Amino acid sequence: MSLSLEDVTRISRLARLELTPEKKEQTLNELNNILGLIEKLQSVDTTGVEPLAHPLSAHEDITLRLREDVITETSSESGRDALLANAPATENGLFLVPKVIE
Image (cartoon, rainbow, N blue to C red; front, top):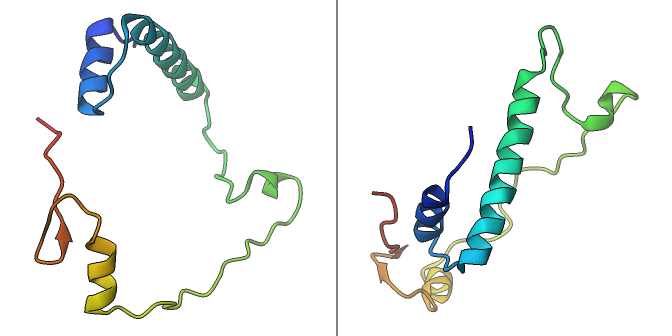
């Protein structure tokens, strides 16, 4: 699968990016290279290969150090208001964002 300049134009519009024609060409090449790499990775037969929790776990016994899932901040209306203070649009304590998916 490869992308066209029209695809890059549409993606950049959805991402709200303004690209020059030169940047569109460069982005097209980079995205097509990424898609080519993904196609190569998908073509590899991984039948019977166990997924790794850590890249080094195939070579040594790795134990992941996970932190406790505890609340570190208490919620309050004043804290929420401080977080929403710089938002361009809010409603009922929530961020309002423009619709970008058609």
